[in-house]
Length: 284
Image 1 (cartoon, rainbow, N blue to C red):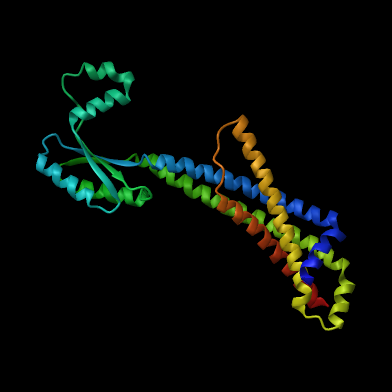
Image 2: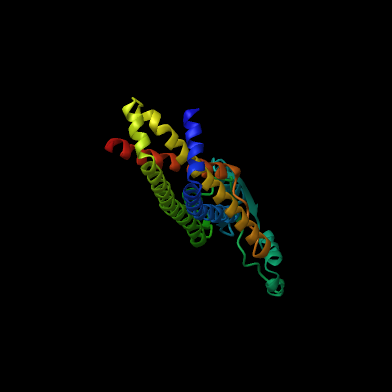
């Protein structure tokens, strides 16, 4: 209770200093919030594109039905495969007419169907990684009656490259701004510690332990970080609503991300205050 009272009293004694520290932390975490919002929407967009990833296995025209059934059954037994659908030459032509209406006149004038028969391999959601797609394509190409296996390799490579770049950028910039937030809280607390240096010295003289002296400052730092996290959440929400209303639709970040941001603010505040007070106690 003493630690809680002292931590709250610190906000009353220096409201401008603590408010400024919380505001600066909020600005730093606000940038992290914007990165999180952008990263989450990028992941949502990439997941939508990833859902369309499938493998088209093109077969020779002289392939026997027994061979088609064999390949369809064996490819369907692969754990990452949801279903294998056979598409005949006639079905391929009908699909081309539906999906490419601008070329419908060209398809209707054909005397011979040039489109090959194929197997359409659909993957299980969450198993559409680049390694899985390449492995299943290689397995399909082992059949002598298979001419080719395609999955749009170029844009699949770019899809997963974008995901890796987004994750790495968010981690790097988020870590940088987290360090900035911790430094801001530590600086504010060092000023508060300096203002109370005589009080801390007297407490040491009467036998107060380092833990007893340290606890109020740890709570103060955690509260400053928590307030900064709350401010960052409000600013991120306001930005999200503005973009959603006037520019384009966005998806709001999950609640677990919000709680993680608030907890991170409190954690970095406590760590920064622990470093600041620990350095001072070693000098007393």
